Length: 559
Image 1: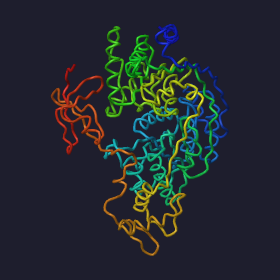
Image 2: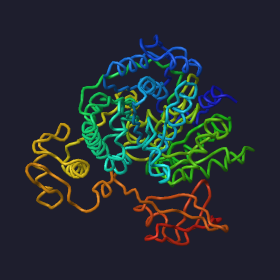
Image 3: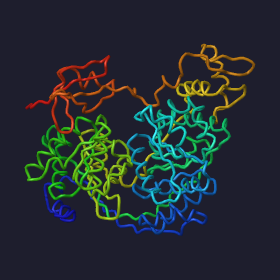
Image 4: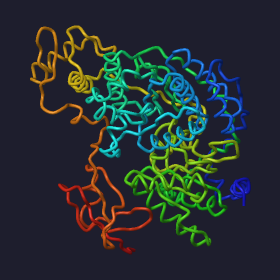
Protein backbone atom coordinates (compact mmCIF):
# COMPACT_ATOMS: atom_id res chain seq x y z
CA UNK A 1 0.00 0.00 0.00
CA UNK A 2 1.32 3.47 -0.91
CA UNK A 3 0.97 6.76 0.93
CA UNK A 4 -1.80 7.98 -1.43
CA UNK A 5 -3.71 4.78 -0.61
CA UNK A 6 -3.34 5.41 3.13
CA UNK A 7 -4.54 9.00 2.78
CA UNK A 8 -7.49 7.82 0.69
CA UNK A 9 -8.38 5.29 3.39
CA UNK A 10 -8.26 7.99 6.04
CA UNK A 11 -10.57 10.22 3.98
CA UNK A 12 -13.04 7.36 3.61
CA UNK A 13 -13.02 6.57 7.34
CA UNK A 14 -15.97 8.43 8.95
CA UNK A 15 -14.66 7.91 12.50
CA UNK A 16 -11.32 9.48 11.57
CA UNK A 17 -12.79 12.36 9.58
CA UNK A 18 -15.15 13.32 12.43
CA UNK A 19 -12.04 14.22 14.44
CA UNK A 20 -10.34 16.20 11.67
CA UNK A 21 -10.70 19.95 12.13
CA UNK A 22 -8.58 20.89 9.11
CA UNK A 23 -6.95 19.10 6.17
CA UNK A 24 -4.68 21.41 4.21
CA UNK A 25 -2.98 20.53 0.96
CA UNK A 26 0.25 22.40 0.25
CA UNK A 27 0.90 22.20 -3.50
CA UNK A 28 4.06 21.26 -5.35
CA UNK A 29 6.63 24.03 -5.73
CA UNK A 30 9.14 23.65 -8.58
CA UNK A 31 12.84 24.31 -8.15
CA UNK A 32 14.29 27.67 -9.10
CA UNK A 33 17.96 27.45 -10.07
CA UNK A 34 20.69 29.94 -10.95
CA UNK A 35 24.17 29.92 -12.52
CA UNK A 36 27.17 29.21 -10.31
CA UNK A 37 28.51 32.44 -8.77
CA UNK A 38 31.36 33.98 -10.71
CA UNK A 39 34.76 33.21 -9.24
CA UNK A 40 33.77 30.05 -7.38
CA UNK A 41 36.64 27.55 -7.56
CA UNK A 42 36.09 25.20 -10.56
CA UNK A 43 37.20 22.24 -8.44
CA UNK A 44 34.24 22.81 -6.15
CA UNK A 45 31.83 23.08 -9.07
CA UNK A 46 33.19 19.83 -10.53
CA UNK A 47 32.98 18.04 -7.17
CA UNK A 48 29.41 19.26 -6.73
CA UNK A 49 28.55 18.05 -10.24
CA UNK A 50 29.92 14.63 -9.29
CA UNK A 51 27.41 14.55 -6.44
CA UNK A 52 24.57 15.10 -8.90
CA UNK A 53 24.07 18.84 -8.36
CA UNK A 54 24.30 20.56 -11.74
CA UNK A 55 23.10 24.02 -10.69
CA UNK A 56 22.52 25.69 -7.32
CA UNK A 57 19.11 26.84 -6.15
CA UNK A 58 18.68 30.60 -6.30
CA UNK A 59 19.08 31.05 -2.54
CA UNK A 60 22.27 28.97 -2.57
CA UNK A 61 23.76 31.09 -5.35
CA UNK A 62 22.81 34.33 -3.56
CA UNK A 63 24.29 33.17 -0.25
CA UNK A 64 27.56 31.97 -1.83
CA UNK A 65 27.97 35.19 -3.81
CA UNK A 66 27.35 37.35 -0.72
CA UNK A 67 29.84 35.32 1.34
CA UNK A 68 32.54 35.47 -1.33
CA UNK A 69 32.22 39.27 -1.43
CA UNK A 70 32.96 39.47 2.30
CA UNK A 71 29.47 39.91 3.75
CA UNK A 72 28.04 38.35 6.89
CA UNK A 73 25.11 36.19 5.71
CA UNK A 74 22.02 34.63 7.26
CA UNK A 75 20.16 32.06 5.18
CA UNK A 76 16.58 31.34 6.25
CA UNK A 77 14.78 28.81 4.06
CA UNK A 78 12.69 25.67 4.46
CA UNK A 79 13.80 22.31 5.83
CA UNK A 80 16.01 20.32 3.43
CA UNK A 81 16.51 23.30 1.11
CA UNK A 82 20.27 22.84 0.85
CA UNK A 83 21.44 25.40 3.40
CA UNK A 84 24.48 23.26 4.21
CA UNK A 85 25.83 23.48 0.66
CA UNK A 86 25.26 27.25 0.67
CA UNK A 87 27.72 27.81 3.52
CA UNK A 88 30.11 24.95 2.74
CA UNK A 89 30.95 26.26 -0.74
CA UNK A 90 32.39 29.67 0.25
CA UNK A 91 34.24 28.12 3.18
CA UNK A 92 35.83 25.39 1.06
CA UNK A 93 36.58 27.91 -1.72
CA UNK A 94 38.58 30.02 0.74
CA UNK A 95 40.36 27.05 2.33
CA UNK A 96 41.31 25.68 -1.10
CA UNK A 97 42.82 28.97 -2.23
CA UNK A 98 44.51 30.01 1.02
CA UNK A 99 46.50 27.12 2.54
CA UNK A 100 46.63 28.85 5.94
CA UNK A 101 42.94 29.78 6.17
CA UNK A 102 40.77 28.13 8.83
CA UNK A 103 37.05 27.94 9.60
CA UNK A 104 35.02 27.23 12.71
CA UNK A 105 31.64 25.46 12.54
CA UNK A 106 29.31 25.75 15.54
CA UNK A 107 26.30 23.46 15.99
CA UNK A 108 23.96 23.42 19.00
CA UNK A 109 24.29 19.64 19.48
CA UNK A 110 27.00 17.01 19.09
CA UNK A 111 24.74 14.92 16.84
CA UNK A 112 24.47 17.76 14.32
CA UNK A 113 28.21 18.34 14.46
CA UNK A 114 29.06 14.71 13.72
CA UNK A 115 26.44 14.61 10.95
CA UNK A 116 28.07 17.66 9.36
CA UNK A 117 31.53 16.10 9.52
CA UNK A 118 30.30 13.17 7.42
CA UNK A 119 28.76 15.61 4.95
CA UNK A 120 31.95 17.67 4.70
CA UNK A 121 34.20 14.66 4.28
CA UNK A 122 31.96 13.38 1.51
CA UNK A 123 32.01 16.79 -0.19
CA UNK A 124 35.81 17.20 -0.14
CA UNK A 125 36.67 13.58 -0.99
CA UNK A 126 37.02 14.42 -4.70
CA UNK A 127 38.94 17.67 -4.22
CA UNK A 128 42.59 17.80 -5.22
CA UNK A 129 43.60 19.54 -1.97
CA UNK A 130 42.37 17.53 1.02
CA UNK A 131 41.30 19.72 3.93
CA UNK A 132 41.57 18.52 7.53
CA UNK A 133 38.06 18.45 9.03
CA UNK A 134 38.09 17.57 12.72
CA UNK A 135 35.55 17.45 15.55
CA UNK A 136 36.38 18.91 18.94
CA UNK A 137 33.91 18.33 21.75
CA UNK A 138 33.62 16.62 25.10
CA UNK A 139 33.85 13.19 23.45
CA UNK A 140 37.20 13.94 21.76
CA UNK A 141 39.91 11.79 23.40
CA UNK A 142 42.60 13.80 25.19
CA UNK A 143 45.31 12.02 23.19
CA UNK A 144 43.85 13.36 19.92
CA UNK A 145 43.50 16.99 20.98
CA UNK A 146 47.09 18.22 20.43
CA UNK A 147 47.05 16.98 16.82
CA UNK A 148 43.69 18.66 16.22
CA UNK A 149 45.04 21.96 17.53
CA UNK A 150 48.08 21.64 15.24
CA UNK A 151 46.40 20.42 12.07
CA UNK A 152 42.66 21.16 11.86
CA UNK A 153 41.70 23.74 9.28
CA UNK A 154 37.98 23.23 9.61
CA UNK A 155 37.07 22.74 13.27
CA UNK A 156 33.57 21.44 14.06
CA UNK A 157 32.34 22.01 17.61
CA UNK A 158 29.50 23.49 19.69
CA UNK A 159 29.11 26.74 21.66
CA UNK A 160 29.63 24.92 24.97
CA UNK A 161 33.04 23.58 23.94
CA UNK A 162 34.05 26.93 22.45
CA UNK A 163 33.10 28.52 25.78
CA UNK A 164 34.79 26.10 28.15
CA UNK A 165 37.44 24.25 26.14
CA UNK A 166 38.77 26.58 23.44
CA UNK A 167 38.53 30.28 24.31
CA UNK A 168 40.03 29.92 27.84
CA UNK A 169 43.00 28.13 26.24
CA UNK A 170 43.30 30.34 23.16
CA UNK A 171 47.10 30.41 23.28
CA UNK A 172 47.04 26.73 22.29
CA UNK A 173 44.83 27.68 19.33
CA UNK A 174 46.88 30.64 18.10
CA UNK A 175 47.19 29.14 14.60
CA UNK A 176 43.42 28.77 14.28
CA UNK A 177 42.53 32.22 15.61
CA UNK A 178 45.25 33.97 13.59
CA UNK A 179 43.90 32.50 10.35
CA UNK A 180 40.17 32.27 11.10
CA UNK A 181 38.26 33.39 8.01
CA UNK A 182 34.75 32.03 8.61
CA UNK A 183 32.51 31.13 11.53
CA UNK A 184 29.43 29.09 10.62
CA UNK A 185 26.40 29.18 12.93
CA UNK A 186 23.91 26.49 11.95
CA UNK A 187 20.41 26.10 13.43
CA UNK A 188 20.52 29.80 14.32
CA UNK A 189 16.90 29.76 15.49
CA UNK A 190 17.90 27.66 18.54
CA UNK A 191 19.99 30.54 19.92
CA UNK A 192 17.19 32.36 21.71
CA UNK A 193 16.20 33.14 25.28
CA UNK A 194 18.80 32.63 28.03
CA UNK A 195 20.78 30.16 25.92
CA UNK A 196 20.88 32.68 23.07
CA UNK A 197 22.08 35.39 25.47
CA UNK A 198 24.90 33.13 26.62
CA UNK A 199 25.89 32.28 23.04
CA UNK A 200 25.87 35.97 22.03
CA UNK A 201 28.36 36.66 24.83
CA UNK A 202 30.51 33.68 23.84
CA UNK A 203 30.64 35.19 20.34
CA UNK A 204 31.68 38.54 21.85
CA UNK A 205 34.55 36.72 23.53
CA UNK A 206 35.38 34.93 20.27
CA UNK A 207 35.56 38.19 18.30
CA UNK A 208 37.70 39.74 21.06
CA UNK A 209 40.19 36.86 20.92
CA UNK A 210 40.22 36.98 17.09
CA UNK A 211 40.95 40.71 17.21
CA UNK A 212 43.89 39.99 19.53
CA UNK A 213 45.30 37.59 16.94
CA UNK A 214 44.61 39.95 14.04
CA UNK A 215 41.69 38.17 12.35
CA UNK A 216 38.14 39.30 11.59
CA UNK A 217 36.11 36.26 10.47
CA UNK A 218 32.92 36.48 8.43
CA UNK A 219 29.84 34.86 9.95
CA UNK A 220 27.65 32.54 7.86
CA UNK A 221 24.37 31.69 9.59
CA UNK A 222 21.64 29.22 8.67
CA UNK A 223 18.21 29.20 10.25
CA UNK A 224 14.89 27.45 10.00
CA UNK A 225 12.02 29.74 9.09
CA UNK A 226 11.52 32.35 11.83
CA UNK A 227 9.99 35.82 11.72
CA UNK A 228 13.22 37.75 12.37
CA UNK A 229 16.30 35.92 11.03
CA UNK A 230 18.26 39.08 10.20
CA UNK A 231 17.49 40.70 13.58
CA UNK A 232 18.48 37.52 15.44
CA UNK A 233 21.74 37.17 13.50
CA UNK A 234 22.63 40.82 14.06
CA UNK A 235 21.92 40.51 17.79
CA UNK A 236 24.21 37.49 17.96
CA UNK A 237 27.16 38.80 15.95
CA UNK A 238 26.58 42.56 16.42
CA UNK A 239 27.24 43.46 12.79
CA UNK A 240 25.11 44.13 9.68
CA UNK A 241 23.98 40.91 8.00
CA UNK A 242 22.74 40.13 4.49
CA UNK A 243 19.49 38.15 4.57
CA UNK A 244 18.83 35.45 1.97
CA UNK A 245 15.30 34.06 2.30
CA UNK A 246 14.04 33.62 -1.27
CA UNK A 247 13.69 29.83 -1.19
CA UNK A 248 14.49 28.23 -4.55
CA UNK A 249 14.32 24.61 -3.40
CA UNK A 250 11.57 22.36 -4.74
CA UNK A 251 8.79 21.20 -2.46
CA UNK A 252 6.70 18.11 -2.96
CA UNK A 253 2.99 17.98 -2.30
CA UNK A 254 2.27 17.97 1.44
CA UNK A 255 -0.89 17.25 3.39
CA UNK A 256 -1.24 18.76 6.86
CA UNK A 257 -3.98 17.34 9.08
CA UNK A 258 -5.21 18.70 12.42
CA UNK A 259 -6.76 15.89 14.47
CA UNK A 260 -8.68 16.22 17.76
CA UNK A 261 -9.12 12.85 19.52
CA UNK A 262 -12.76 11.86 20.10
CA UNK A 263 -14.60 12.58 23.32
CA UNK A 264 -14.85 9.62 25.69
CA UNK A 265 -16.96 11.49 28.25
CA UNK A 266 -19.38 14.01 26.76
CA UNK A 267 -20.45 15.45 30.12
CA UNK A 268 -16.93 16.05 31.44
CA UNK A 269 -15.45 16.89 28.04
CA UNK A 270 -12.71 14.28 28.41
CA UNK A 271 -11.04 13.23 25.17
CA UNK A 272 -9.09 10.14 24.27
CA UNK A 273 -5.39 10.31 25.07
CA UNK A 274 -3.31 12.06 22.41
CA UNK A 275 -0.66 9.35 22.77
CA UNK A 276 -3.15 6.55 22.03
CA UNK A 277 -4.63 8.46 19.10
CA UNK A 278 -1.16 9.16 17.70
CA UNK A 279 -0.26 5.49 18.13
CA UNK A 280 -3.28 4.37 16.08
CA UNK A 281 -2.58 6.87 13.29
CA UNK A 282 1.13 6.03 13.14
CA UNK A 283 0.36 2.29 13.15
CA UNK A 284 -1.71 2.67 9.98
CA UNK A 285 1.22 4.35 8.23
CA UNK A 286 3.70 1.74 9.46
CA UNK A 287 1.46 -1.19 8.51
CA UNK A 288 1.44 0.25 4.97
CA UNK A 289 5.28 0.42 5.11
CA UNK A 290 5.25 4.23 5.00
CA UNK A 291 8.40 5.45 6.74
CA UNK A 292 7.17 7.55 9.67
CA UNK A 293 8.46 9.77 12.45
CA UNK A 294 6.37 10.20 15.60
CA UNK A 295 7.21 13.15 17.86
CA UNK A 296 6.43 13.01 21.58
CA UNK A 297 6.86 15.81 24.08
CA UNK A 298 8.39 13.75 26.90
CA UNK A 299 10.91 10.95 27.27
CA UNK A 300 8.38 8.69 29.01
CA UNK A 301 5.79 9.22 26.26
CA UNK A 302 8.47 8.32 23.70
CA UNK A 303 9.15 4.97 25.36
CA UNK A 304 5.46 4.16 25.92
CA UNK A 305 4.62 4.91 22.28
CA UNK A 306 7.59 2.85 21.14
CA UNK A 307 6.30 -0.17 23.04
CA UNK A 308 2.77 0.25 21.67
CA UNK A 309 3.96 0.59 18.07
CA UNK A 310 6.31 -2.38 18.26
CA UNK A 311 3.43 -4.50 19.53
CA UNK A 312 1.23 -3.22 16.70
CA UNK A 313 3.86 -3.94 14.03
CA UNK A 314 4.52 -7.42 15.44
CA UNK A 315 0.78 -8.20 15.51
CA UNK A 316 0.60 -7.31 11.80
CA UNK A 317 3.47 -9.71 11.01
CA UNK A 318 6.19 -7.06 10.76
CA UNK A 319 9.58 -6.74 12.44
CA UNK A 320 9.21 -4.77 15.68
CA UNK A 321 12.92 -3.83 15.51
CA UNK A 322 12.09 -1.71 12.46
CA UNK A 323 10.60 0.80 14.91
CA UNK A 324 13.12 2.60 17.13
CA UNK A 325 13.14 5.28 19.80
CA UNK A 326 15.31 8.40 19.76
CA UNK A 327 15.73 10.80 22.67
CA UNK A 328 18.21 12.37 25.02
CA UNK A 329 19.78 9.73 27.22
CA UNK A 330 20.53 7.27 24.43
CA UNK A 331 24.24 6.70 23.91
CA UNK A 332 25.85 8.45 20.90
CA UNK A 333 26.57 5.17 19.08
CA UNK A 334 22.97 4.05 19.52
CA UNK A 335 21.62 7.34 18.15
CA UNK A 336 23.92 7.28 15.13
CA UNK A 337 22.91 3.70 14.38
CA UNK A 338 19.26 4.78 14.36
CA UNK A 339 20.08 7.72 12.08
CA UNK A 340 21.84 5.36 9.64
CA UNK A 341 18.87 3.00 9.76
CA UNK A 342 16.51 5.82 8.85
CA UNK A 343 18.72 6.91 5.95
CA UNK A 344 19.09 3.43 4.47
CA UNK A 345 15.43 2.52 5.10
CA UNK A 346 16.00 -0.33 7.54
CA UNK A 347 14.29 1.66 10.28
CA UNK A 348 10.72 2.24 9.11
CA UNK A 349 9.52 4.21 12.10
CA UNK A 350 11.08 6.30 14.84
CA UNK A 351 9.49 7.71 17.99
CA UNK A 352 11.43 10.79 19.05
CA UNK A 353 11.47 13.79 21.30
CA UNK A 354 12.41 17.13 19.75
CA UNK A 355 16.00 15.78 19.66
CA UNK A 356 15.22 14.95 16.00
CA UNK A 357 13.58 18.30 15.29
CA UNK A 358 16.93 19.78 14.28
CA UNK A 359 18.56 19.07 10.95
CA UNK A 360 20.31 15.73 11.50
CA UNK A 361 20.22 13.85 8.18
CA UNK A 362 17.63 11.08 8.54
CA UNK A 363 16.86 10.63 4.87
CA UNK A 364 13.49 10.82 3.19
CA UNK A 365 10.56 10.12 5.48
CA UNK A 366 6.99 10.29 4.22
CA UNK A 367 4.84 10.78 7.32
CA UNK A 368 5.09 12.76 10.55
CA UNK A 369 2.76 12.37 13.53
CA UNK A 370 3.04 14.95 16.32
CA UNK A 371 1.75 13.92 19.75
CA UNK A 372 0.56 17.26 21.04
CA UNK A 373 1.34 20.80 19.94
CA UNK A 374 5.14 21.33 20.09
CA UNK A 375 4.73 24.72 21.75
CA UNK A 376 5.39 27.13 18.88
CA UNK A 377 4.23 27.42 15.30
CA UNK A 378 7.88 27.46 14.18
CA UNK A 379 8.61 24.15 15.95
CA UNK A 380 5.45 22.61 14.51
CA UNK A 381 6.53 23.40 10.95
CA UNK A 382 10.07 22.28 11.75
CA UNK A 383 8.81 18.89 12.95
CA UNK A 384 6.39 18.59 10.04
CA UNK A 385 9.29 19.32 7.69
CA UNK A 386 11.07 16.15 8.81
CA UNK A 387 8.71 14.29 6.49
CA UNK A 388 8.96 15.04 2.78
CA UNK A 389 12.46 16.48 3.01
CA UNK A 390 12.85 15.90 -0.73
CA UNK A 391 10.48 16.01 -3.68
CA UNK A 392 7.55 13.65 -3.15
CA UNK A 393 4.23 13.33 -1.38
CA UNK A 394 4.27 13.63 2.41
CA UNK A 395 1.85 14.09 5.28
CA UNK A 396 2.00 15.64 8.74
CA UNK A 397 -0.66 14.99 11.39
CA UNK A 398 -0.90 17.12 14.53
CA UNK A 399 -2.77 15.22 17.25
CA UNK A 400 -4.04 17.63 19.90
CA UNK A 401 -3.68 16.92 23.60
CA UNK A 402 -6.22 18.02 26.21
CA UNK A 403 -4.15 21.08 27.12
CA UNK A 404 -5.99 24.40 26.57
CA UNK A 405 -3.46 25.71 24.04
CA UNK A 406 -3.75 22.52 21.97
CA UNK A 407 -7.54 22.72 22.07
CA UNK A 408 -7.54 26.36 21.02
CA UNK A 409 -5.29 25.72 18.04
CA UNK A 410 -7.13 22.60 16.94
CA UNK A 411 -10.50 24.36 17.02
CA UNK A 412 -9.16 27.53 15.35
CA UNK A 413 -7.17 26.13 12.41
CA UNK A 414 -7.04 29.50 10.65
CA UNK A 415 -5.04 30.84 13.59
CA UNK A 416 -2.42 28.15 12.95
CA UNK A 417 -2.33 28.15 9.14
CA UNK A 418 -2.79 31.90 8.72
CA UNK A 419 -0.34 33.13 11.33
CA UNK A 420 3.38 33.77 10.68
CA UNK A 421 5.96 31.91 12.73
CA UNK A 422 7.22 33.48 15.94
CA UNK A 423 10.23 35.71 16.47
CA UNK A 424 13.36 34.41 18.20
CA UNK A 425 14.38 36.83 20.95
CA UNK A 426 17.44 37.17 23.17
CA UNK A 427 19.09 39.74 25.41
CA UNK A 428 22.91 39.62 25.37
CA UNK A 429 23.06 42.52 27.87
CA UNK A 430 21.20 40.67 30.64
CA UNK A 431 23.53 41.48 33.54
CA UNK A 432 23.10 38.06 35.15
CA UNK A 433 24.55 36.55 31.97
CA UNK A 434 26.86 39.37 30.91
CA UNK A 435 28.80 39.67 34.18
CA UNK A 436 29.81 36.02 34.11
CA UNK A 437 31.07 36.31 30.54
CA UNK A 438 32.99 39.48 31.34
CA UNK A 439 34.81 37.47 34.00
CA UNK A 440 35.49 34.74 31.42
CA UNK A 441 36.72 37.34 28.92
CA UNK A 442 39.03 38.91 31.52
CA UNK A 443 40.52 35.48 32.23
CA UNK A 444 41.21 35.10 28.49
CA UNK A 445 42.66 38.59 27.96
CA UNK A 446 42.98 41.53 30.40
CA UNK A 447 40.55 44.41 29.87
CA UNK A 448 41.88 47.90 29.27
CA UNK A 449 40.15 50.99 30.68
CA UNK A 450 37.42 52.18 28.33
CA UNK A 451 37.33 48.93 26.38
CA UNK A 452 33.83 47.87 25.32
CA UNK A 453 32.55 44.31 25.25
CA UNK A 454 30.90 43.89 21.89
CA UNK A 455 28.17 46.52 21.65
CA UNK A 456 27.95 46.78 25.43
CA UNK A 457 29.73 50.07 26.06
CA UNK A 458 29.43 50.22 29.86
CA UNK A 459 31.67 47.23 30.55
CA UNK A 460 33.80 49.34 32.90
CA UNK A 461 31.03 49.59 35.50
CA UNK A 462 30.60 45.81 35.62
CA UNK A 463 34.37 45.27 35.69
CA UNK A 464 34.60 47.63 38.67
CA UNK A 465 32.05 45.51 40.54
CA UNK A 466 33.99 42.34 39.73
CA UNK A 467 37.15 44.04 40.99
CA UNK A 468 35.40 45.02 44.24
CA UNK A 469 34.36 41.39 44.70
CA UNK A 470 37.98 40.27 44.38
CA UNK A 471 37.46 38.45 41.10
CA UNK A 472 39.53 40.92 39.07
CA UNK A 473 42.53 43.08 39.95
CA UNK A 474 42.38 46.65 38.71
CA UNK A 475 45.62 48.58 38.33
CA UNK A 476 46.49 51.56 36.12
CA UNK A 477 43.34 51.07 34.09
CA UNK A 478 43.83 47.36 33.42
CA UNK A 479 41.57 44.60 34.76
CA UNK A 480 43.22 41.21 35.26
CA UNK A 481 41.76 37.92 36.45
CA UNK A 482 42.96 36.88 39.92
CA UNK A 483 40.27 34.38 40.92
CA UNK A 484 40.80 30.68 41.46
CA UNK A 485 40.59 28.26 38.54
CA UNK A 486 38.99 29.52 35.38
CA UNK A 487 35.46 30.95 35.35
CA UNK A 488 34.19 29.24 32.18
CA UNK A 489 34.46 25.89 33.93
CA UNK A 490 31.82 26.98 36.46
CA UNK A 491 29.38 28.54 33.97
CA UNK A 492 26.91 26.44 31.97
CA UNK A 493 25.43 27.96 28.81
CA UNK A 494 22.26 25.93 29.27
CA UNK A 495 19.71 25.81 32.03
CA UNK A 496 20.62 22.28 33.12
CA UNK A 497 23.94 21.02 34.38
CA UNK A 498 26.08 19.14 31.85
CA UNK A 499 26.81 16.50 34.50
CA UNK A 500 25.10 13.17 33.78
CA UNK A 501 24.31 9.95 35.60
CA UNK A 502 25.29 6.80 33.71
CA UNK A 503 22.64 4.05 33.51
CA UNK A 504 24.08 0.54 33.71
CA UNK A 505 22.17 -2.66 32.89
CA UNK A 506 23.23 -5.39 35.35
CA UNK A 507 20.98 -8.09 33.87
CA UNK A 508 24.01 -9.85 32.39
CA UNK A 509 27.66 -10.23 33.29
CA UNK A 510 29.51 -8.03 32.56
CA UNK A 511 27.15 -5.05 33.13
CA UNK A 512 26.52 -2.82 30.12
CA UNK A 513 26.03 0.95 29.95
CA UNK A 514 22.77 1.58 28.08
CA UNK A 515 22.17 5.29 28.56
CA UNK A 516 22.56 8.43 30.61
CA UNK A 517 20.42 11.07 32.30
CA UNK A 518 21.01 14.62 33.44
CA UNK A 519 21.78 14.72 37.15
CA UNK A 520 18.83 16.94 38.25
CA UNK A 521 16.32 14.48 36.72
CA UNK A 522 17.92 11.37 38.21
CA UNK A 523 16.34 11.45 41.72
CA UNK A 524 12.89 11.81 40.15
CA UNK A 525 13.13 9.34 37.27
CA UNK A 526 15.73 6.71 38.21
CA UNK A 527 15.55 6.48 41.99
CA UNK A 528 15.77 3.04 43.60
CA UNK A 529 12.66 1.02 42.69
CA UNK A 530 11.69 3.24 39.76
CA UNK A 531 10.59 1.75 36.44
CA UNK A 532 12.86 2.93 33.63
CA UNK A 533 12.02 2.47 29.94
CA UNK A 534 14.75 2.43 27.32
CA UNK A 535 14.49 1.37 23.70
CA UNK A 536 11.18 -0.38 24.32
CA UNK A 537 12.59 -2.50 27.18
CA UNK A 538 11.38 -2.18 30.77
CA UNK A 539 13.92 -1.99 33.59
CA UNK A 540 13.66 -1.67 37.37
CA UNK A 541 16.23 0.57 39.06
CA UNK A 542 18.13 -1.40 41.71
CA UNK A 543 20.33 1.43 42.96
CA UNK A 544 21.23 5.07 42.36
CA UNK A 545 24.69 6.22 43.42
CA UNK A 546 24.28 9.99 43.34
CA UNK A 547 27.86 10.82 44.27
CA UNK A 548 29.34 8.24 41.92
CA UNK A 549 27.00 9.20 39.07
CA UNK A 550 25.76 5.71 38.26
CA UNK A 551 22.37 3.99 38.34
CA UNK A 552 22.08 0.20 38.08
CA UNK A 553 19.00 -1.26 36.41
CA UNK A 554 17.77 -4.75 35.61
CA UNK A 555 15.42 -5.85 32.82
CA UNK A 556 12.01 -6.91 34.11
CA UNK A 557 8.64 -8.12 32.82
CA UNK A 558 5.97 -5.95 34.44
CA UNK A 559 2.23 -5.70 33.95
